Length: 236
Image (cartoon, rainbow, N blue to C red):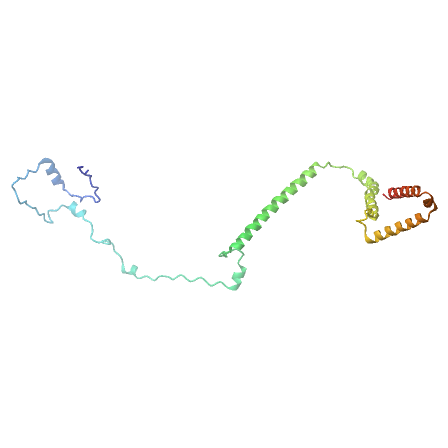
């Protein structure tokens, strides 16, 4: 069985102050009180009168009331409190003259806040972009050599006009040029096909009526093919 550990309790209140007179202090220092016998049952009590209490003890007695000893005249109790005047209501003119932003701030919605934030970001981006463009233009201006006399440049400018106008004339000639007609029969238009058939029919009729074809057909066909190839080469 384990015993309990006794702990000293903390005192929450201080003990009462005991007031002792100089006579008692001196007497206690000089004379020692005799020890009381063990068989004594009753103790003697000593009652001191008000005359026997010293003056120091009377001075240390605290007053019964908090305001004891204070003199308050009755004139000080009778007072009239001044009521502060209410502020004047603002008129329409005063509200109109108020600068913007003064007074209570209007509560904004979430969309308005997002819109303002987006505008601020766009302004920042545009400012950064403009600063970079100005910096690049400044670098280009610094890299460009400074020309002193501009008379030579003005004299040389009219001589460059023919070289500047030449590409425009070439473009016009290129635009006038027609697109080559297709030689494949499948890619030809109906009018082109009809024209080709008419030409072939006329050539066939000429070959049939030719006397050279009747005497030597192979030599006439070979001559016709040579002429046809030569004509196609010239067109291409």
